Amino acid sequence: MIVRGAFRIANSLSHSLRLLFRIFVVHLALGTWLASSMACAAGAEPPPAAPLRVAVYDVPPYGYANPDGSLSGISVDLWRRVAERLERQFKLIPVSEMETILSGLEQGHFDAAIGAITITTEREKRVDFSYPAHRSGVAVALRRETGPLSALKSYASAITELSPLILSSLAMLVLIGIVMWLIESGHPSAQGSESSVITLRDGLYWAIVTMTTVGYGDKTPKSTVGRVIAVSWMFASLVWVSLLSTSLVSRLTADRVESRESISSMDLTRKRLAAVAQSSGAEYLDAHALPYMKFNNLPDALDSLANGKSDAVVNSVGALQYLIAKRYGNAEEMPQGLLAPAYMAIALPENSQFKRPIDEALVKITSDPEWISLEERFFGK
Image 1 (cartoon, rainbow, N blue to C red):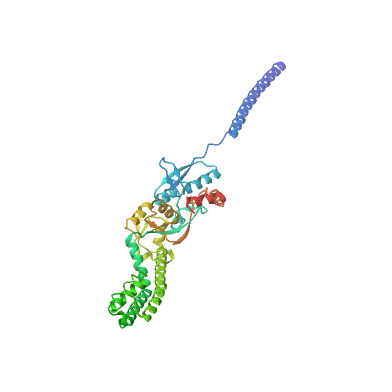
Image 2: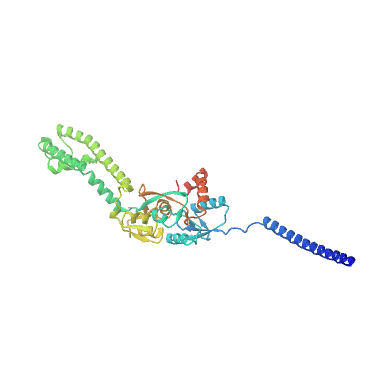
């Protein structure tokens, strides 16, 4: 009995040991597999981030589409540098209307928007903005006055302004003609000579031809006093005509310069105004309660100015300068100065995670002399 009991105990212990060994082997294999899986997971690269969706406001020279479909512009170049610092891929999406950009940022269709996007109070209510990317401002484009009619207007304006000098010249001319007639008509040698100044008409005629330095010689004074007056009138005429001509030329030159009136003295209330809908120019006009015609894009607005349908176009200064220089140089011009200073920036959705890294990148890029030189070449400074 004792032997059988011991045998059973030994047999049971052997079975238990085999079972424990099997469990140990299973756990060892499972642990090895888990460790291997975790090591593989730790060594594997994370999936690449999705490209940023960047809207490009189609307004040269900040952003525009080339014939081959690629996008260029000063803002596009700036964004490429920003994206390089962020180490992010991106997709550029051309957009022609500001409302599409603003609503796209609000609804999450775009991660950022670049181009001629001015920081304004109304836009800040809907989207966020980065550190300023470009200096800008609200400016005005006017139709250039050219042609014979414009020249005649300038000449008439100059004549009107110089009218006191012209009237005094005419009065002096008449006075000298009368004096010469009175002196010469009673002189004995003047009688019977066709070249003598014997009538009032002869006196005025002689004074005119002498003043204008024509001096035909068909009418000449015969008396000594008359000849002294003639010599004096010749020298006086030289001075008088020189004064009159230089004053007229100076006035015409000044009138041409003043025709490019400064914005500070411009009265927009008397002009037919045009602006691109929801542009910085449109917001400026709305803020000052000035009526204006709305256009979908800047070329259409400038066309209305060139065709005489409007008197002035209000928009951001950089875009106006670029388009006028490229397409409207002979028909339109810009007065000096700005209606209001402003800045352009990268537009972002509210609470964007990219705002801080974009701001840091912009601060470094825009302060680089190489970038400043590139921006100056874009705007022809």
